[in-house]
Image: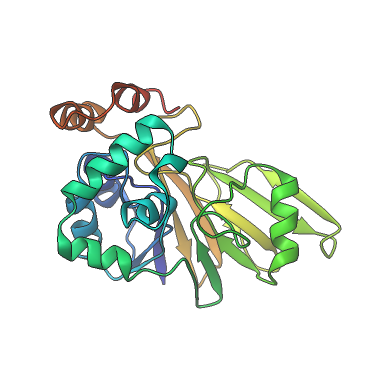
Length: 242
């Protein structure tokens, strides 16, 4: 089975459509949260994803849109977009978000938005945070999002060492016999200096994961955001991937 693993779409329909149009053949989608927030098409993103065999978890922006956290936890621009999304989201799609778990295990793989310890909020950006998560839960491979940066952390020597690995964009990551935390990067809000949408393909038979990037019409999303009066800083950052 081949699974499209994506995260942090953030209401960016144009980016999602490019991923779906160019991704290698897949059987289902695993989404690691933050379907909404920041972007101009929250309803359309949720509805498009539901056209596929989908497993999804909640992200922190989804959580905020549902009113489960104080909006002042978010910075001013994110908060503005979050409150706008609350008014824009229709009742059916709100119910869909509310039905999602904070984390789930599927076929031996763990799916969370942020981390094993804090599925909604913790950022896994360094080996110290990764080490604490490897110690917290006895998983083999976990997929995470939240940072908007493609990353891999590996626990080796029975947990005595944790190392960070940069994604290899040319060769699949071998999963067998390894303990890994894998972040495919963001579809709708990349923050590694590359504005192209990021995602991955999990091959459950070959036990590999491949990282992918695809360009999309950033200007379409930017124009939709301007029409909706979303913050200029959120609009500008799309073209630089920061």
